[in-house]
Length: 351
Ligand code: CP3
Image (cartoon, rainbow, N blue to C red; front, side, top):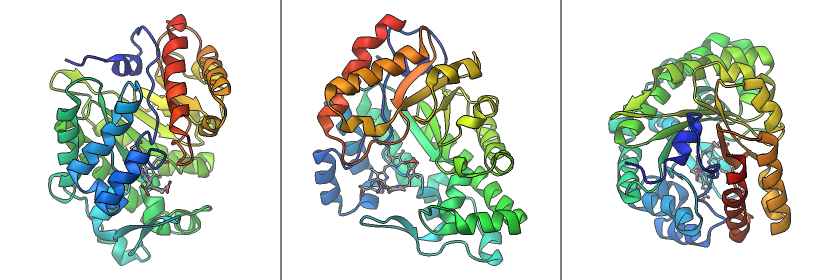
């Protein structure tokens, strides 16, 4: 039995004593202890691929801050790496694939990796982290969305305009649909393997969906998110496993995202969370949505801005406090402590 089940309850829109808080990228380069472990591991992928290191860095932010959840330390690009695209990270440039998908033959030969074989290190990390947590707080597993994974697989790395991806989307849509279909089956199997290994919540990151037109978002991202949500286990070992869907820049399509069957929707900082709550009604919980750059401000400002979001959401259940995107590597760790403590101090008044 979980000692702190506040996150699970909030995601299922059940009453809680306060608003739970965790932060996207809560483990990372802003923590000196992370950088030390990373140096020992040799590289970021060395951290991800070794369950002992992955467990160590997953627990680091929990040792410092009173967070209400742990998130598996890994990356969304493990799936295309397991498909054989050759992932590597270059300092300051982000992820790159050695063999991006550039021709029809490569696309038709894509396969769905078997999580227990090709992604064993992730499944093992989940099991090991879950044991190390000893039921203190829930463990969140995650995956990229089929569309966001395709962006990296086709463009070969982070791209500001998704030039190759969009060229394929409008020129050879059936090829992109084939990639998305394979990704959809891969993501579903991957999330189910994480659930079976001990993940108590799952989150799907659709980082690039917001770059699409309204019609293209429905056809190339949301429809596959819906299929993934329909294919993941709703409960495991007698416990409900809530799902969170986060499309960065997806505020315009909030009602549509809320209708795909997920338990919660993550929102970035561009929208007012009170307005978002009115729009989704009782259909889903909401997760968010402090602008991560507010963590560069002084503690007084961080507290005020946290209060602003709690007030905007208002009284009652169904809010998980988070940032609107990941913690920046330039964030002072003390400012994260200020935020977490502020949410815990200020939020009981709203419950
Ligand atoms: O939230 C957590 O603490 C769990 C760990 C986590 C990481 N990546 C660790 C990481 C999660 C949930 C992710 C997801 C991820 N990875 C996404 C979706 C969320 C988002 O940020 O939009 C995306 C798009 C990726 C792909 C990726 N991985 C990029 C673009 C980069 C480079 C970004 C950068 O800041 O340099 C990564 C690397 C990465 N993933 C780091 C971490 C801690 C930094 C790597 C390092 O130590 O050098």
